[in-house]
Amino acid sequence: MEGKRFLPLSGVVFVVLAVLAIVAVGGDTPGSDASGAKVLAFYDEHTVRQGIAAFMLAASVPFLVFFGVSLATALSPSDAAPRPVWGRVLVGGSVLAAAAFSVSAMVHFALADGGDQKVSASALQALNVVDGNTWIALNSGLGVMMLGAAGSLLPRAGAYRWLGWTALVLGIALFIPFADFFALLLTAIWIIVTSVKLFLERSEAGYTVAPGTT
Image (cartoon, rainbow, N blue to C red; front, side):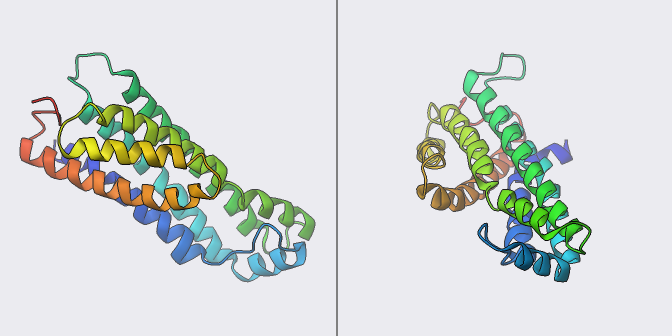
């Protein structure tokens, strides 16, 4: 039961690990238009660091699923009742987004692994183009998750309603070019806020009452 109490905070762990992996450790990687020689030189020099970034991103994956499942479970009327359709979309979206993050981590590790000249510069250049465009899969998965969260939260009362409206706007924006970048940043903040709120509320209720069901 003690472990279940902290499960909602998995959303915070996911965001922290993903941001550290992409921003702090991964840093300024070559763009999609970089030449093969530049890509090879970069990953040859930063093989270990970029490998660590890939493993950190992979480590964030289960925490995103934990967050999606814990939120859907908290919003379900009861453990015995069939899960509402939007709860299923929420869980499915979290799994879809987690899979996209796994693929992104795999591609990035392939770049790091090939950086010590195991593969040709042209092969690394092709991998770098894929690595630089995995964002479309990440945003799509998160978009489905956010739409599922919106459908689950909007019928609720109080603060959960504004979280639902925010999730709806972000879920739509994640599928819109250019707007998706800002939506991605705000989605990370939304996950943190929702995780903390759910943790505090479930802690006070002792896991006896689901949010919005009283």
